[in-house]
Image 1 (spheres, rainbow, N blue to C red):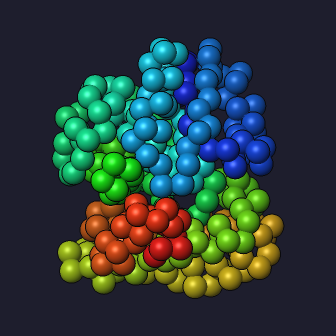
Image 2: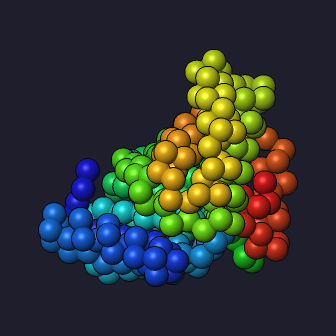
Length: 253
C-alpha cells in the first residue's frame, strides 16, 4: 500500500528518541518524497489534525504513515478522512459518517497500549467544548500495521505503565461487554493473560524484548477485540478526564 509521496505523522518525543529517523531511513529509498509532521500532542486536538491535513495537501501526498502512540495514529487516520472526502473533523463525529475508503494509512506503533493500528475508531479532542469526540467507521481502519517490539524498547516507565493499563482496560471491558462475541472474547482474554504476565517485567526491565513483544501483541489483540464490541464505563469516564484536564488516557483508565 506504500505510496510515492508520504506524510509521516509523529510526535516530538518519537523524533527526539531517534525512532522517527529509523523509520525514515527505511522509507527514504522506497519513495519519491517524504514530509514529516511531528507536532502531535497527547489528547490531540482538531487544530492539530487541520495543520497536518494542510501539510499533506500542500505536498500532494498519496499515503500517510503514522509513527508513535495512539495520538499520532489517530491524527493520521482522521487526516486521511479529511484529505479524501473534504470537510472538517466535526463533519465526521460519531459512527458511520465516513462515506467511503480513504487514502492509505500505515501505522507503526511505538507503544503497547491503544491498538489504534487495527481499530475503526479515532479519538480527537475538541478544545472548544471541551470534549473528546470519536470518528468511527470501518473505513478508518488502517491499511496496514507494522508492529515491531524493538520500537517500544525505549518507552519510559510511566508511559509503559499507562499504555499497558490502557491495553488491559481494553481487554477487560471487551470481555465483560454484553455484546462481546466468542471470537472477540477469546482475543480479549488472551490479551489480559499476556498483560498480567508481562507488563510488570516490561516496566521493570524496559529492554526485555520478550516482555515488549508480548505486550505489543497483547495490545494489538485487545484492540482487534474491542473494535468489534466497543468498550465500557471506564473509557466513558476517562475521556472527560482527558478532555477537561489533559490527563494521559492510560492514566485516566
